[in-house]
Image (cartoon, rainbow, N blue to C red; front, side, top):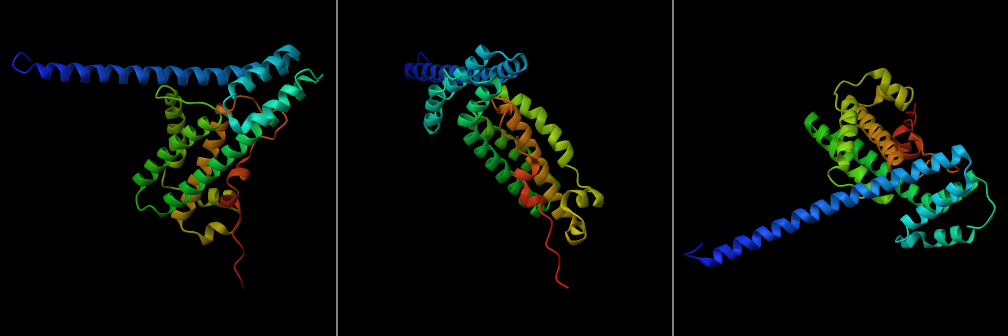
Length: 253
């Protein structure tokens, strides 16, 4: 550096940039963990308020949920309606159910659409891919992307540490969907009588992979949602994978 002092300046600048990048990563991880814990706290507080019939706790849950989505422009009307009913005499279930309807119903629809889209993509790609390694890679990639998408819909922003839980869930998911051998009886149970005889083994495997992706998405929805299902009906497999579950039309005679 004595022969070329400017190299020392460049090295210090690069070191400073690396330090700033590391700091940004740490801040992002901490912020993501805070938001995940906030969602978990809201869900647990709602469960406790319903179980104990605590009206004050229910009001606190609604207030915290509204504050959590304060930056969501699309939920502004719902927040206003909740504020208007803040002093109304409501049962605990009705109060939390109203917040669920006003703030989470639109997000539930987005999450269901994301799950349905991912299930169809996995079904199509794994049915057409020539190798099992491609199936495995795409299933894992889709699971990671789907959880990130669902978390973002409900306000979570998980970083690497948040995805450690996803990795465990994805491995469990992969254990079910990664195998090549798919039994004829299992396909018949899922797709309906007679269809298994009219589809190839690879197509049947693609459909099953899509269904398992949908099931993984429903589990991710339950984890990322800041409230339990109170008044709204929880989505079922047929709601997000209806096209995959629909039996084939009978062949013309």
